[in-house]
Amino acid sequence: MSRPQAGFSLVEMMAATVAVAIMSLGIFSVMQSSATAMRTNAAQLDAYQKAARVFQKIERHVRGASLANLATLPAGFETAQPLAEGIEVDNLILCTMVSTPGAEEELPALSAPLAVYLEPSATDPVNGLDDDRDGVVDGRNLVLDRPGHAPERIASGIAAFGASLSGQSLTLSVDVAVRQPDGSARVETKAHTLEIRNG
Ligand SMILES: [Ca+2]
Ligand SMILES: [Ca+2]
Image (cartoon, rainbow, N blue to C red; front, side, top):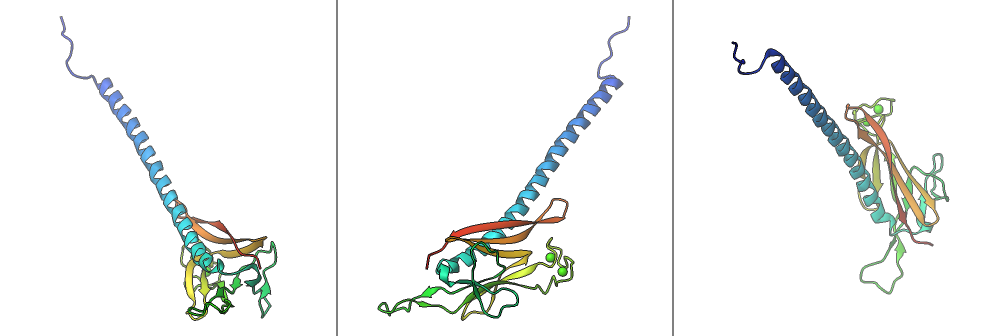
């Protein structure tokens, strides 16, 4: 009379090994997609933060301007033109109303013009290539040029900057790169609308 064998048979061991392998693959796949999602979210956050910094910098100055003081300098023009309703422009020129400290009786005066514009980047010259590999081909620097200050670079790697007026709303937009999990990048437009004064 044969007694039952103790332990596992070869078939049982193989089945268990396959089950563990399948479970491990499942866990690995879940972890991998979580890591991909985290990288995508981090890249999205970077792009949002970059755009938010740009909007914050510009908004601080635009708030002191009025519709009448907003202008653009179209290509081929030497003097600024009033910002036309609904027309997207790629630079912004504005004057803010400033008051002289200690001279409250004097009416606020217009400041010297302040400008926001794109300038070519030294690290990504205009040649149809993404020389600095940030995902934006021929990305440019966005510059804030205030009277009495050296021009300040407020962002780099910008594909486009735009502003357009609709009533008393001024919409600013920047095109920034969002890095993909596979290392490539796509350009996304971030926009921000602010209300300005009339007259
Ligand atoms: Ca670039
Ligand atoms: Ca380039």
